[in-house]
Image (cartoon, rainbow, N blue to C red; front, side):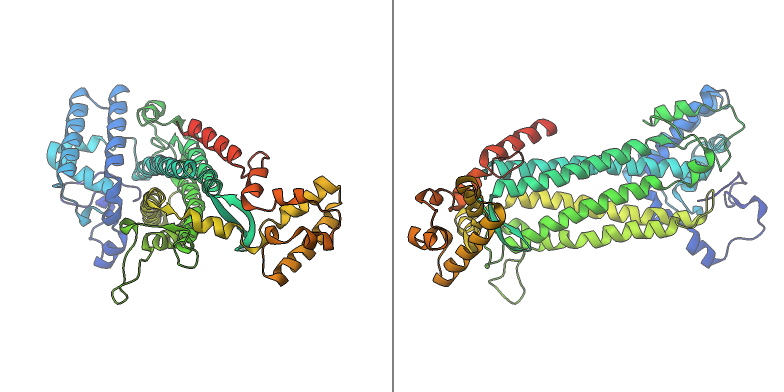
Length: 467
């Protein structure tokens, strides 16, 4: 996709200066229609906007404008019907459309490319595609958040262990745990919105790199294509791919979050954890072990981060050393973006499906919530609040208490008052009000804490945001 000019029918659309056809290897490395045909809808949008603008400013006659717009409609019909003749000889989507337009309406088609280059044409097409991809990701993230909200609301009081270092730390509720991902995916959606806002400028009319001598109205085409404004520098307009890099950055962070929750699902469905069950809809079996129920959807989602992060790296490397303005290297910008968003779309939809599908094992989670002396911090906090003990001293007393319980093979709540007082004589029966997982969870009433009343507040807040 590079600079071009009109040539007689039957020759390459950019071949006026050339006497011979490109070598077959040159054609093979140069052609991009195999992947950039995905920009067909955006290319037609851009061409319609450009034709309407050229007509308004007097560059296109009414007759030619009508013929061009009618031809573009016919091409769109062919594409929807699957009969459009995509041809490698025309390299890319822009030249394929232009060549087909010439076949349909004749010489008038050649006027469409007035005041336009493939450089600004691909820049606007690609920007439109990435903008659509961001909108799609936002909608899919919101669907995932709603699935998480529904599951969290059903488990506001369901106990589960909270971990640090994958070791039992403090009890939380399963609803609180799921709401952590609502927050993460909320930030992901915000990143896509920010990226979309920054990319919403139209490069159409920048032409090859220097702008156009024709009296074009770039504000008109920008408005027609849903952009906020035209880009302000013609060199930057055709050479910028920040919008794609930023979208891939947002996609990569989102994929990391998807991978994290996928990893937890993989752990939770193991017999060793047994925290949740996934139905047949999101599991597969083994060809040799009939007892197996494998969380393949979660595992594949977990793996997609490599593909998406790789796409960001790939495009970054393509762009890192390019002088202004357009270079053919930038033809390699689209495959990583297409691949990344294909993977992201599928992963977001699969995760929403898994969240909706999973069934918590509340009994198993509650038992695990009290394991590993998970209420030890509650004991330390009680010593501080009730006995006015400095926290470091309380920490030491609690550590000795955990060691005693461990030696007796019991939990903290199972130690007798006499045993507790052997370590700290001031401890009273009131201490047992904080040693159970349910009491621990109920006490965490600070804003954003795991107390059911606080979790319910956050669910209400997010429901209002996503309304």
